[in-house]
Structure formats: C-alpha cells, structure tokens
Amino acid sequence: MIHQWQLSRCFNIDDLRKLAKKRLPASLFGYIDGGSDDEYTLRANTSAFDRYSLMQKALVDVSEIDLSTTVLGKKIDWPVLCAPTGMSRMFHHEGERAVAREAAKSGTFYSLSTLSTTSIEDVGRETDGPKMFQVYVHKDRELSREFVQRAKSSGFDALCLTVDLPAHGNRERDLRTGMTLPPKLTAKSVLDVLLHPAWVYHYLTTDAIELANVAHKIREGSGEVSNLLQYVSKQFDPTVCWEDAEWMKSLWDGPFVVKGIMSVEDARRAVDIGASAIVISNHGGRQLDSSPATIEMLPKIADAVGGQIELILDSGIRRGTHVLKALALGADACMIGRSYLYGLAAGGQPGVARAIQLLRTEIELDMKLMGCRQLSDVTADCLYFRDQ
Ligand code: FNR
Image (cartoon, rainbow, N blue to C red; front, side, top):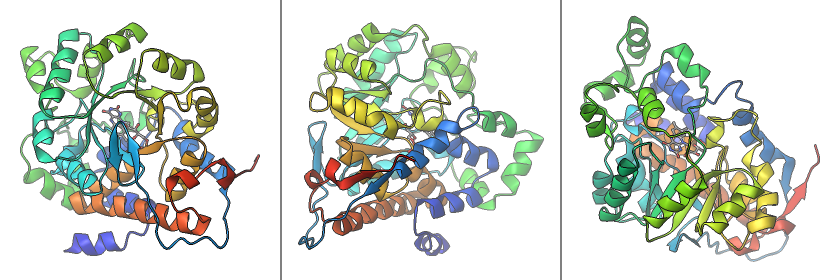
C-alpha cells in the first residue's frame, strides 16, 4: 500500500529514480544508474535532446491521439519498446517477469537479455505479448546456437544481437561499491544492505538469484566461473565480426535486430546483411565513454539508411519529448532501459507500470500540444534546431 502511495507521488522518471535510490543498496543502484569512465556519454545521452526544440501547430483537432505503429512486423500500441537489461531480479524479486507483463499490457515489445535472472522459457510462458530475445556471439558458438533455438521454441518474435560489448565497459561506480553479480557478502556489502530494509525484505523472500540462461553452463565449467564479470570475460568473444552477425542471422527465421550501432558505415553493414532493424545505442553510456549521444548520430544514420531498415533509438530517454524528438529525426521507435528499471526497483510491477504510464501519458499530451494526431505527423517540421 505504501508502495502505491509513494509511486503515485512520482510525477516523472526522475522521481522514480529517486525512489529507487532510497530502496536499493548503493551498489545495486549504482549498477543501474552508472555509466563508464567519467560518465560523459551517460550525461550527454539525455542532455543532447535539449539541442532540439519542438514546434507547435495551432488549431488542429487533437481530440483523438493515435500512438500505434508497426515495428518488427508487429503492431504496437505506442512507439517505445523495453530494452534488454541483465539481472533484473537483483532489483526486485519479480524481475523480468514484472517487466514482461507490463510491456505486454501496454501493447509493446519486451526484450529479454541473455544475462537475465529469469529463463527464456519462463518469460516465454509469462506473456503472449511481442517478445525479443537478445543474444551475444559467445566464444562457444554452440551456446549461442542453443540460445537461439530456445528462443524459437519459447515463442519469441524477434532476435536481437548486441554488438557493442567486445569487452566490458569500465564502470567505476561498481568498482568503488564492490558490486558483484550475484552479490557476495562482505562487511561492506552487509552494511550497505542493512541500511536498505525494503531491499532486505525482498532479498529474504526470494530464492537464489542466478544467471538463469547460463547457470547450467557455469556449473558445467566446474566452478571456474562464479560471477557475471568472469562469465563475460570468459565467454564474450572479442574476435566477433560481421560474418558472425550474418551467421547469427542465418540461425533465425524472423525479424533480426542489430543493437549498438553508432555510425553510418555500420548501419549500412547491417542493411547489407539483411537485418530488419538496428538499435542506435551506446548501451546507455555504459560502454565507450566519449561516444556521441545517440540522438546526435540519428540524423546522419536516418539520411543514409532510413526506409531500408527500421531505426530504433535508445540511451538517455527519460521524457515523452525525447521520444518525439527521436521520431521527428527519423527513428521508427525508441527503447527504454533505466526508465523501467527505476520503476522496477522503486516498486516492482506497479513501479514498472508507473514508468510506462508516465512516459506514455507524456507522449500523448505532448502530441496534443504539438498538434500531431498520429505518429506520422511527427516529422522534421516539428523540430527547431538550436545550435547551442
Ligand atoms: C543494460 N543494457 C543491456 N543491453 C543488452 O543488450 N544486454 C544486456 O544484458 C544489458 N544489460 C543492461 C543492464 C542495465 C542495468 C542497464 C541500465 C542497461 C543496455 C540497455 O539495453 C539499453 O541499451 C540502455 O539501457 C539504454 O539506455 P537508458 O534507457 O538506460 O538510458
């Protein structure tokens, strides 16, 4: 009950972020919230939206607003997808299930990470909504093949290959807080946890948190790998190249998405291998720091490949206006990561619902104020570019 009251006092994504910060141990909040190195890209992702203003058209009948669109062959009710994020049950015991259910209720895609704490099969059973499974090309190619097969059998509609993780970014907040996944009990982490009774309750009432899709592989490796970072450095293959992306695509019959594209050249390569969509993404500022904000790269990429491949933009979206600016610059849809994770950490499934409701209501209201009735009305004419 207190949850609901606190959630109803969150009026935007930043309010949910503040509530998540109160509820989570510092190490876990830092894991969600943080970026790499100096966090330049993390900040730029959101602040770069301020370089664009939105124009308003007067005297348009905006009594009915239609937010629906078609992405990856599925009609969705609003132009925002839920991005893949690992280890969601660390933040709330309902984890991936809660997000998948709310994504389906709102009529959009849920993307399940390979590094999830709920299995492909469990998420497959959880919802009939549109679903995408996110993979990496592992050193053990059979493991990647097995994931694709499991996603097919579990009814996933699309496959998403993440290509911006040839190595794990330098996340200094995690180093400072001693963050490990799954968590290890040390004097510091116990103190951190005890200061957050809401999370202690969650932790005590949940079963063991593990990397649900790869745990058996970790065990097969006879204990050689005991946490996420070790797993990433052991299984992630720095030799992966476009031929491997093509190979991954050949394993999948449906829509294929390449996530982590930041240049025109790479966008063209994705078109060449026959991908259905790219996600213009810098992993939410968690990988290469000093990478440009995604919204800065969108116009160039849209000019070069718009119409040949679907363009989904993520990283830094916290407001409805951010989504509308991306659409006006040529994106077909956007994706959110932290926005729903703050909601999940703040209040489980109702928290995710609140995050989705806030963003969706903002988009609808902003479209009314702009004089746009449907997403196809949101074009470059709606933008005013401020050069500073
Ligand atoms: C991520 N992201 C991510 N991406 C991916 O392809 N596989 C993954 O397992 C994860 N895990 C993950 C965990 C956490 C805690 C975060 C915050 C992000 C990146 C994610 O899909 C997306 O690109 C970013 O979250 C987008 O930026 P915003 O919306 O968080 O600013």
